[in-house]
Amino acid sequence: DQQVKQNSPSLSVQEGRISILNCDYTNSMFDYFLWYKKYPAEGPTFLISISSIKDKNEDGRFTVFLNKSAKHLSLHIVPSQPGDSAVYFCAATVYGNKLVFGAGTILRVKS
Amino acid sequence: GAGVSQSPSNKVTEKGKDVELRCDPISGHTALYWYRQSLGQGLEFLIYFQGNSAPDKSGLPSDRFSAERTGGSVSTLTIQRTQQEDSAVYLCASSRQGSNTGELFFGEGSRLTVL
Image (cartoon, rainbow over all chains, first blue to last red; front, side, top):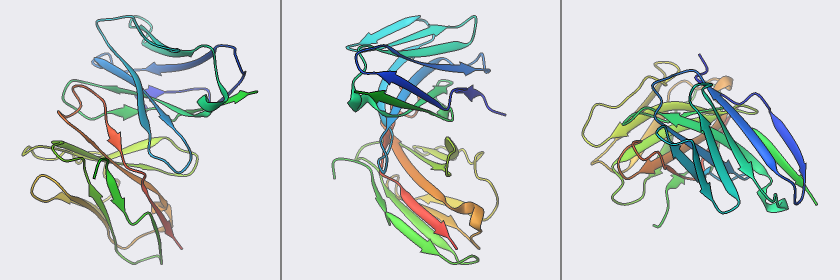
């Protein structure tokens, strides 16, 4: 039972343009959502998060949007840079419990 | 150390052998997690330790898998009678207050190859 789904295995974007990574979830009890970034041969690193009481959180070039009614969140990166090329994981949690991760989306930013 | 440390970084073993993977979390972090990533797959939850509470073992795929955390710090993940499908990168992560803040700090992983 995949509670967190990232339906796009990969995404290719031109440098300077916007990257939009999508994530859907099924558990309405999730109250905190996160994005992690992973480079090859490294562990994932935390990127940005959002509480279920908000619909938007922004940090520099990264913005996460949450649509609770649609059980959907997205990560926007603008402008995209070649160094953003990595695997992006969406994750969700119910307070005090384990993080549930999606399968990841490979982002390639072409220069 | 400053980050989560895992050892060994690479382990090649023969089918049927037991393996132990070690994780040293960030000092002071009360929560410790084990995940694994099989080739082409996402991060699969295995087990979660939070302070002195009973661990959440709901992600362990079979009774060949076990984990312990001694003294609230170092953790060891043990896989008995390894199978080829156990081949994966095993990732350990820690956090300050469990997952209520959600931010986990991951190690670089232990890559296990079962021949």
